[in-house]
Length: 329
Image 1 (cartoon, rainbow, N blue to C red):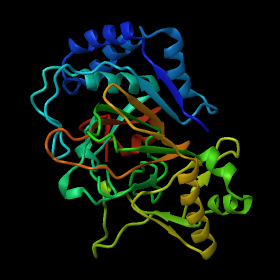
Image 2 (image 1 turned 120 degrees about the vertical axis):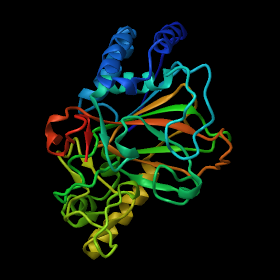
Image 3 (image 1 turned 60 degrees about the horizontal axis):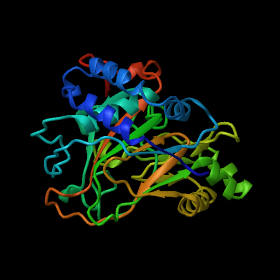
Image 4 (image 1 turned 90 degrees about the vertical axis):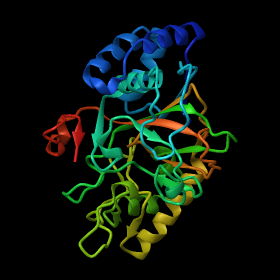
């Protein structure tokens, strides 16, 4: 399954960039900002706009879309070293691009246990997390995974985002950071029928991702209830896998998990993001991963911004916090 690839014409890029450069920090009033971004992105050429909208609303579209030639901020501060928002910003074009594309797919969602509930996530290498299975890592391969959410119901595959958007503010200096995406349709087609049947059985437990760590009183990991890794209609399978660990419950499930990992590598598309590019990722149609890359922690490292998106916030309203209707526990 190949990914979709679109590019803004130069004149459109420049016009959108001018409008976004005049808008304030969206975090001051997110809903107002999203409304303005809707107005800006509605002016995209009809063909491009429909491709993005179709990506988000149809079952048979690819699970990955690369959007190129996007506007960028004229001046950027150093890449933040701690994974928190950078200060000293004069313009917020990057956030406008991120949330503008987000608004075409659904509603941005914050989770208290990820980036303190912020809607815009700064994804950068952090020295202390270099070898962790999180977005702060760089020295280890970040395994194929879905972005999943710890949930007290025991199901970590229910309240997870429907989509992610990754907008690149600064590419890896050595161009050595690779994002991989393996579509569940390609995975299922490449696996033996018996293996697919095992992956569709509730024979696995998912561990909450490292950045969502919730541990029991004795410090042990908290695992999900038994779940399948593949589900849904055979034509349109859904996949949910934890980067921080999957526990197979039988020998057959262990073999199936090993085959799944090998197949993800074999069928995955590869993208090396650079400034002015964004990836739209369907978090249910496929799983993604990231290569190792060299981090220097000198202010020039790779810098992405990310959003979590739900098509609707209604089905996860049981998680909403009283303080902010977009931020969930």
